[in-house]
Structures are given as structure tokens and as C-alpha cells.
Image (cartoon, rainbow, N blue to C red; front, top):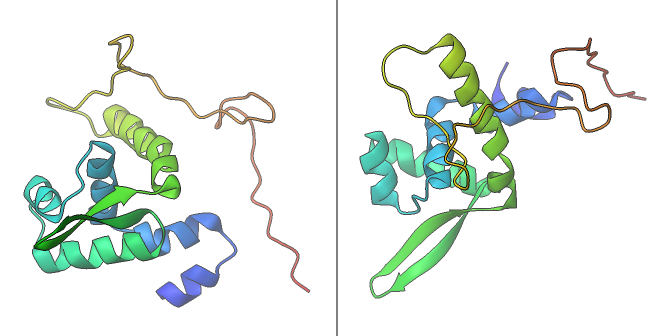
Length: 147
């Protein structure tokens, strides 16, 4: 399946993976949530090749997860800041991290803490309609009606 087919897929998971489907994109978003905004900051943090970083930042910008902002006019320099869509992705990253702690742990791992309490968080996903934790009740994936 190529990216065009994935983008036309009615499954929102497939559509998301069409542009976020590699580790670099997710790690760039993670670092953006940590407060990194500049190309060199991302490059240093990730150890990613400049050409690869340029492509990933362009895609994340085109897809509306990041936006460019000019932070210096002379010389012209841009930074990358999270959009609403990028900020709304934080729970996804936190849940990936929680899954990684449980199933890919071992050795020292980053912990996520609540700033106000100083306590490690224990994230769960809840269905806002029923209040039930996702994974505790059967779910069904319903395809859209196509005429």
C-alpha cells in the first residue's frame, strides 16, 4: 500500500500513519513538546541527518502539526512551534510512552511527572461518552457507508 492509498483509506489510523509513520516524526513531536523549536536543537537532540530532519519538519508543517515562525530577521531564521493539532497529539505520545514503560522497559527510563504534584503520572484512555477505560469494553470499527 502506498501513501496515496493510505491517505484515501477511511481508517483514521492509516491516515495518521501516512505522515507520522516513522520514529523520526514522533520524536520530533516529542521534542517539540519538551520545548525544542529550532532546527539545530532537533538535530542535536535526535542525532538525525540534516536532510532527513528537513523532510520530516516539512511534512509535519504541511500536515499542520507544526508551524514555522520567524525568530530572527538578520539573518532570517525560523523556528518550529506546535499548532493546536500538534498540541492535541500530546496524549498520544504519553500513551505510547506508557505502553513503552510497560512492555519495552528495562534500564533507566524517562518518567513523566505532573508539575504541580511532582508525582509520576499514570495515563489511561477514557471514552468520554461512557466513561469506560478504552480496552475494558468490546469495540467495533465501523466502515463509512459509501454510495
